[in-house]
Image 1 (cartoon, rainbow, N blue to C red):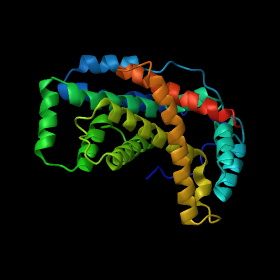
Image 2: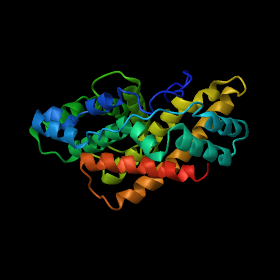
Image 3: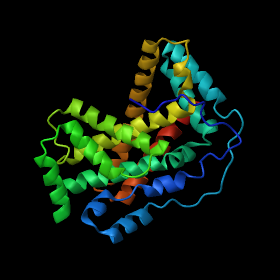
Image 4: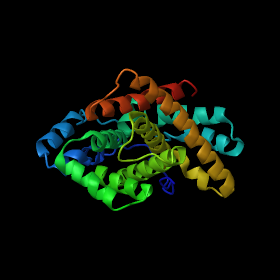
Length: 282
């Protein structure tokens, strides 16, 4: 699974962040409050994660040149050193630094925070309408994968932008991976460790999708067999997962039970720190 990289990726001479990004990120609301019909709380949560306006910065020409060169070396050899250089150059020059990578992924972190809030909420909520929603879902005898689809539809219920579709895809993959790890897990009654695992898997998938869209076009080249391309992409995803998971686990120790806004901040920090580490290899 993953978002297609068939486009050529963003070039130079354009803003690092597209002008529509803030509106997409802000449209990902508070599904628990939507179920319980508490718009005041939903508006409060949206305000909590409203991004601070930043000056528009223009990306330089050939911004991803070095990143693509090193990624090509990795695709040919499978050498992790080349992958690390590709990721470091992607962050430093291609995106203008780790902070901008995190900013570019604010739809992802907002969606992740919403998913975290929702999974804890459906487990713990005493709200009648939330409990009714859970009971109705349970009464349908859905498969775990169908339950996952219902959860995702609640967390991201509007729009059809590339950002939102990527988040849906990443959530579905994260829950599928969790079910592979723990086939008996109840997605409507997960313990905190399982929910945090979903966060790690989701953010790794989103980072992979972002990179694939920006510089992953070479994996579709005739120079590599489909088997080679899939193998390299899977290895790249696993490496991103290991690095992002390490940062999330470290940050989690200081924020045991985060609010939605705190979770958004934590995920932003995890992405920023991860790509700062990558830049050391550039």
